[in-house]
Image (cartoon, rainbow, N blue to C red; front, side, top):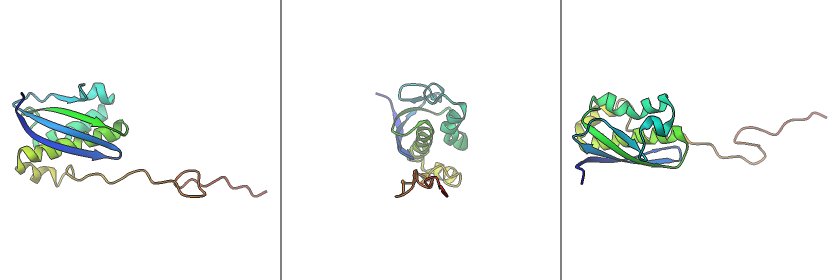
Length: 131
């Protein structure tokens, strides 16, 4: 049984991530059983996932096990980042001083706007024809 140091839930758009930190790790991150680069398929998204560790300089202290569901890859990467930040605060409350001002503990509230009546999409109106 691994020694869990902290747990956090992260959300972004439609994605939800459950994140567990494992004490005494080597900085290995697993998202749904795969490395971040294999799962997310983009360097930019893998960098987003590591951001809480770079901010707190604790990248080599913990291993991360993560289960993420829903949304697309960008939303899932943001959810994992939010979950890791919350798990770091759960593991050590002093991390809140670094993660809070960096904006990593705040859930990003931006979601897709609903479709409106008489429009094709949320803001895209039907094509206008003068004749």
